[in-house]
Image: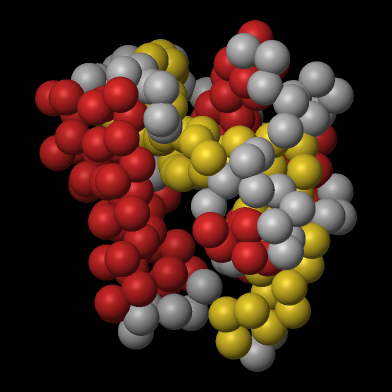
Length: 192
């Protein structure tokens, strides 16, 4: 793994993060076979930019990001955030997780994926949530590839909404405990 620094975002990171959001979301939709959903891609990018704005405007009180920086290039190569559980999570759980905290925007630049950076970001976020004594934590995904990663880490989802997005495209939600998630040992990626 390259030399990675984890730090909080700064206002001057906005343009670079916009590029990261655009690149990761576009790549994800492509790998999911959804490249033609141009409007949905744009909506997803704009929602992540709103989350970032919420973090920067509130100094991390409403949304809270960690960034992964490649210290060799000084480039932002990943991010993760937490904030209030989304309306989607509330709907998919019939309100059971309303008021919970959601881990989201777990993005790693396509060139840096499967190198342990996502694991590092997730581990850092879980430690952050644990240190803040936040216990009602959840995570959701509608992307098939990401769902396989989350199942590997967190097991079978607590909620599965079949065919939510379209036939064969389900939505999954996990309840997470920051204290007993041995994420580093479960991923098993090659960390070269």
